[in-house]
Image (cartoon, rainbow, N blue to C red; front, side, top):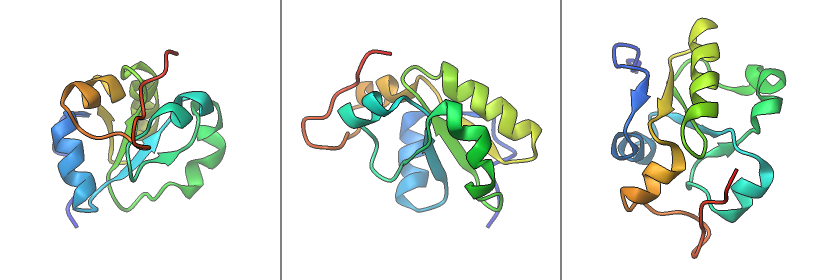
Length: 116
């Protein structure tokens, strides 16, 4: 499968939703556990930012990976680090707040975006 490396590192919520639905990306939620509990994107794997380096070897390097947080700042740091390590890494532009603004679903039903 071709990578997304030719694309900019920032991906819109709509594009991420499309890629996730097709199973073409690994979505990593780097928020704190309480944030993840409040509301999350179905299909995202939760690895808090402070554990990301220690779990890097469990993240597939053979397919694109998209990082996601509340606003996009923490996930942008993860994206830069993983791109530097050779991953086809991308950031969900605007984070989960942009996802909700795009009227994309959260889990569980009634989920919400917790403050950071």
